[in-house]
Length: 440
Image (cartoon, rainbow, N blue to C red; front, side):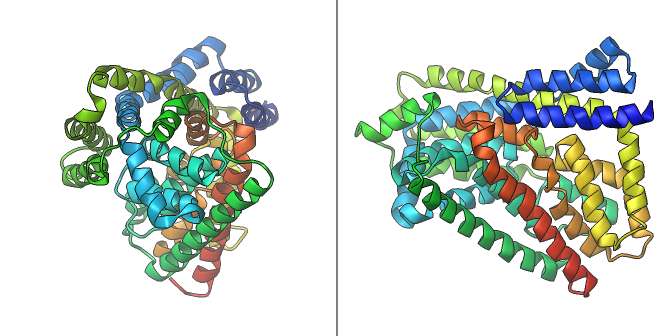
């Protein structure tokens, strides 16, 4: 039964990756993959569907409901007020056509490093990115990769990152999130350089091939606003809500949970936006807020459904085999290299770097520490490596971002593969080399 369970889990993950890549709704694809695991693992059919899959889906949905809805409402207000267009014009005038991708990447990173969740950043940055990409005629297929690379990869490789996976690793290892400063600095410089060069080159290359900006249905208001010549808010009023969000998030960091502080900050940012830009929202504030609030539900459902699948994977017969395989790996290779392989296995199976990190911490961390490795080096290597196979096509964050951007999984994934799968693994291997020769 164990062999069948292992095969079933592999087939289920492969089916989920294939179906989402081909454009099937993530909710339906996750159900199909879940049924494959239930059958091959000999699990109780309805009990697993209701008390594991649906319970996890419902828990994630409830946990993120207000955060998603408030962020989406804020995004809609930014769009309808013209504030997003005003900010885009400001950055476009400073950086010009060639640096539109770099500007979007840096903005995403700065918001993430100030504690805004990657799930939420897409709603805040997308309205600003669309006018920039339209004017520079850059394909929107790059957007999910840019948002993911800026808000996840660059955030995690930066010393002092507030990412939950960095916090989980530092607490387990007893290190600081500023650990391994020399290694971290080298990896950070490489990460920024690779990101800016790749996205700038890709934008130019895609444009030359005829793959340029194509608006989705949800972009209609942004495009209409930028081409109608309507009055836009001045930059200082447009940027004020962003400043309010970042400042309040820092102020509330020690008095609220991370999710509560983010939700409160964005809600206050929306209020600041309405007050300071009321002239541009007069007569349709409630309509815009409601439209934005409701538009987030589908993206959240997709995310929750994929998390529900991950919870079923965790109780499957085959998953224990992968844990045993990872524990065997730990004693067969360079410990840093085997750590990279093991945490990628966990992240790939669960489709989330945080889940992979938590499983690694609970099953293998003590064994690796017992091998006498440098814990600061291990912290940095693991944090970077965990972002490798977590961004396969069934990754909830990627699926949600593609949906918000109005692009298909198939058309946008090659850039995600290059920048948020291959690049983090390469950066982690650089860390392995540095740790092996004693540069920490």
